[in-house]
Image (cartoon, rainbow, N blue to C red; front, top):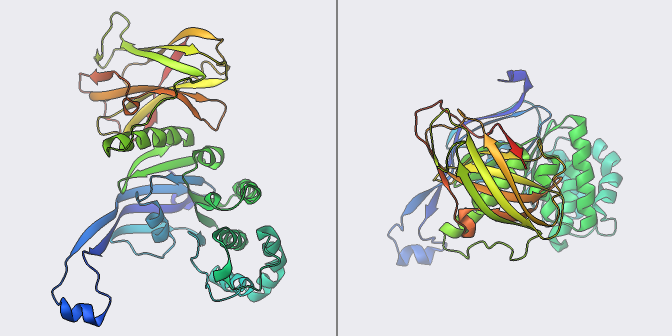
Length: 402
C-alpha cells in the first residue's frame, strides 16, 4: 500500500445520484394547466467507486457512453458534489474536463484565453507571456479576435487544450481531447502527453481510444453501469473493454458482433483439459490446460490472449504469449499451441473461457476471437473446491508451448 504522500488522488466510497423529473414544466402556463407534480426518479450515475492514483501516474479511465466516466471527472474537478463518499486531492489540479467548460461564447478567443488562465490560477502577466505560445499551438492566429460562438468544435478544443497545458498544476484531468481535432493536432497532443509523462505530473485520462490507453497510461480502470469492474494493466483493460462491448451489444439485442470471415489468423478451436483427461471440472490443485488450434492465412506478428470471465461478464484474469513466445510469427498453414495454467489461482466457481489473437507489438488490434459474444461456442471451467479468495483482477501464471 503506497504511503499517503505518494498518492495524488484518493476516491473512497463515492456515489452520485441525479434526480430526474418525469415531465419538465418550463412555463407558468404549463404549471397552471397541469398543477400536479409529475414525479421524479433517482438515477445512479456512480456507485461505490474506490481507487487511488499515485503521484506521477498516467491513469486511464474507459467505459461506454453513460457509464459514469465524465461524471467522475467532474466530481474530482469540483464541478459536481458527490451524494456520498469522498475525494481527496493532494496537489493542485487542472480540470480540462470537456469542451466548453470555462469558456464564454460571447467573448473573443483572446478574451477567453485570459479568462481561462485566471480560472486555472495564472496571473495576467503570466498569460501575456504565454499568449503567443498558446495561440501558435492551437493554430488560431487569424481567429483570436472572433467571438468563440463562431468557432468550430475543433477550434474550441484546440484552444482549450492549449491553455490547459500551460497551467503549473500537479494533476491534469483530460476527457476525450484526442477525439476532436485533425490529425496534426492529435499528433501534437500526443507529444504533449509524452512530455507531461516525463515531467512527473499526474494525468487522469478519459478516452474511448484503446490505442491511446495502451500507449500512454501506466494503469487503467474500466467503469460499467456506474461501477468499477476492473483496474489493471492498460493492455488488459483495453482487451477487457473490447470483450465487454461485445457482451453488451449482444445482451441489449443489438446486432451481434461478427468475426472477420477471412482474418489473417483464424482461431479454429479452443479445448480445455487436465493433464490426464478432457474435462472442464478441476480441483484446486489441478493445472488447467488450454489447447488452441488456428490457421494462418497471412503471416503477421501477433499475440494470443487466453482469458477467464465470470458469468456476470466480469473479466477475472488473462495470460498472453508475449513472455513465452515473443516472436510469435507462425508460417502459413495450420498450427496448435497449448497454455498450462498453474493450479491454485482461481477461486471456486464457474468461468467462461475465451481466446483472442491480436496484433503485436502494441497497440493491440483484434484479428480473431473465440468468445460467446461473437456467436462461438466457448468452454466453461468449474473450480469445484473452496479455495483462496481472489479480489480484483490479476494476471494468471502459466506457460505457453507450441
